[in-house]
Length: 171
Image (tube, rainbow, N blue to C red):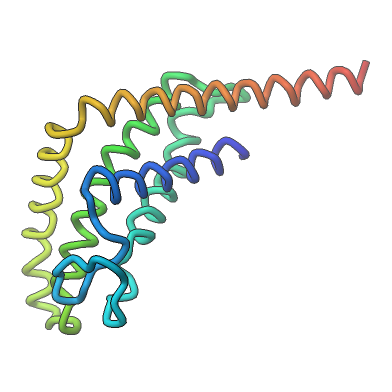
């Protein structure tokens, strides 16, 4: 349970770092989708940095038990894979948040227009993902794998410590 929470926090930190350093996005987006340098008073409330970071953190918390945790054991390869997937997943999540902020900048459009724009939004998300993976994937993917490996090793150490303390108490 502890490693799942830590994986969620790590996913959120990776998302924040990617938002600010890789994509070079500000902390908030202006409604007309001119990217705001600061946080002006007319900023859309759901479009700041924490939305994609929270989504990716939650996805990390879902992926960690699926890929890394197995019957009282934590897989090093599964932990690395979970964090790599989270680091890659951030790009489409961020693109969707930015595109939806642009689409709803002057209020919610009619349902038909909104649904009609979703394929374009998803296509832009896929395009942004591939472009950023080609641009920064050589650094971010191995770094994410290392972070996932270290997180899984930390989880193994915590599990070993808890088992050792239980044996010491029992014996």
